[in-house]
Image (cartoon, rainbow over all chains, first blue to last red; front, top):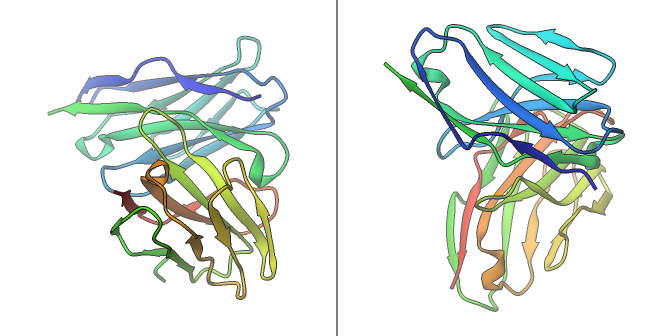
Length: 112
Length: 113
């Protein structure tokens, strides 16, 4: 089955620097991937998604890169701000809504 | 527009008790789902619904029931609470088939003693 995991449990970044959060997946049939942000005591918040036929997708201050050859995706956050401090986790899906597998998350700490 | 609203935010139960976790969304979304989040694990799907009157099991459905009598509401029932059901429960919604969970509530933190 699908497994989706994060390389590092905690990432500390200086305010203003760029952050890169990595994720590996196992199911080569996954056809879309999603990044979520979860602040303490809150529910996950959708950030950005990417379909498997894409290599890169950009949003507001965020970029997701997908490397299907090594089954790896990353979330890049530009000019990291204190409000970016949260747990970030990736998810991969095959087909329908119910087929999404969630990773465990990386905690991003922004140092002022 | 409140999004996805979950109640209660916290609950403590004794083993064997039953309760219902409430979830409501005001975005007219077809898809709704329930997840549990446990330490060291990713979100796991309990039950989901693709529209009023239609529900199906997810990855970890045992011990839970759901119903979807309206588009807005999707309650999760614990029939006989067990300590293994201690978790944080999230309800999510999405506007259409084939899309990922987009809107989550802020969760219900449930402890079973």
